[in-house]
Length: 112
Image: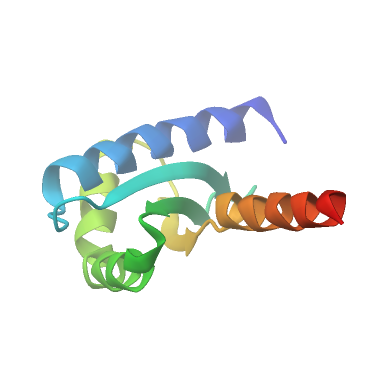
């Protein structure tokens, strides 16, 4: 991955994080963290991976982000000074929960 794409990923991550914190109201006790941003080399699309805590609120957060997608996209477009402007897509990052599951399975195996 080129240095330019890495810098763009970091820039998008910072801007979207700020937009979500300031403009999107989530119910109390729900935390959304951007774990990774992956922009295509042609700068047309950006996948934003989000970690959601607690896990029981994943559906709620996914629906909220989907409902607010155009508002988030518009706010991001105003902050980015580049062409083309990448279209964003939110993806729930399940890495942490899968890691917990694997760790539990390994403990179960070692206890047998």
